[in-house]
Image 1 (cartoon, rainbow, N blue to C red):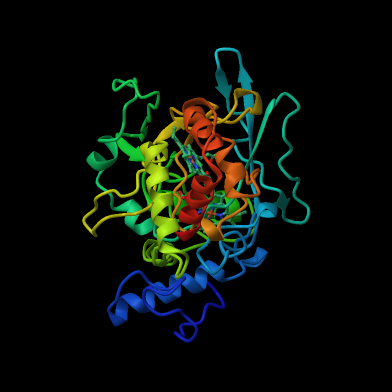
Image 2 (image 1 turned 90 degrees about the vertical axis):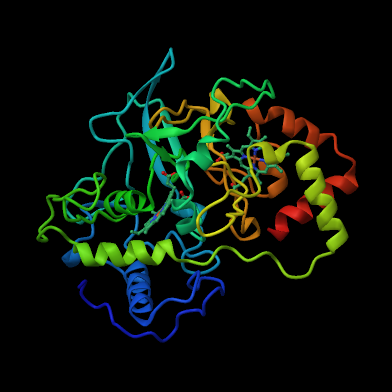
Length: 359
Ligand code: HEC
Ligand code: HEC
């Protein structure tokens, strides 16, 4: 067990409450969930495995808005880099794709090579409801894919396949399971090593002074269990129902829901994430972004919109301060929807924004 992690149950929010478990859990499962939550917020110190390269010393630092498990502040953005040539051909440097901002005393930070011409910021995403997303069957996601735009609606939607599985986590959907995503985060963001068999994304050893693995398989399982069972964002209470309903209609009428699919079926019931979890051309090529899996530099995963009111600033890099600015930054496949939004009568625009803030 990671040092200093207590086994109490004191301060956890109740089932379905913001930051609480997504369902009634048996006593044993609740103990696991709670322990995973403790690990999530526990500061890892150098003597427990932090680093050698890292961005932060706990998951909490980046996933705490507005409560544990939520999104992260823009100053906790992670940095990705690489080289993009005509073609476009993207090269990952031998140092890796990520440039953690910190390192242990006496260890050099990872410098971005001068030849890198792409430096991309990524803002920590919200983790609420992601267990449901993990359990959406592949065929449900693939049903919305239209890689060659066969229906000629100007919107394609490509799955970022990872070894035959549908990628759905991360801003480029480069990770197929929540487990893999958490392993990657523990490795890259905190510098923790994990037992070699828990995930291909986990480094089994590193060259700091702490014996590997720095998190046991049990620690890792508990933290994955916690992240898999955080309640979905609750719709906002109050608001003018007629305005919100009009906003929902506008959302549909101007084609937002083609990518931000309101609901997907899962064994746990409908997942109202407002995303298809597919890749779409959405940013300007001039902004220069990295590539993961089959994604092109301009493609990102449709951002889920549930809980939107608490997750700003918006977009993969946090460049949009408001929901309005985020919508006005839809290019490529998203340009027609942006244009229709731009030309909306003011009342409809307000209704749409009220609807989005209610999710
Ligand atoms: C330095 C900040 C930072 C830390 C620390 C951090 N994360 Fe993240 N997290 C991010 C960023 C940035 C992303 C988006 C990454 C991407 O797109 O590849 C993210 C994405 C995720 C996702 C996927 C979200 C989605 O919508 O697909 C999960 C799950 C996650 N983090 C879990 C964790 C866990 C568990 C920990 C602790 C082991 C952790 N993170 C630590 C910054 C952080
Ligand atoms: C072609 C697909 C597509 C369409 C159509 C589309 N979006 Fe998006 N949307 C995306 C993608 C992809 C992102 C992620 C962009 C990024 O991360 O930089 C996104 C991001 C967003 C965000 C930011 C969310 C966040 O958490 O950062 C908002 C808000 C949003 N869209 C609202 C809308 C609205 C409203 C419409 C209709 C006017 C719309 N979108 C139409 C694909 C689409």
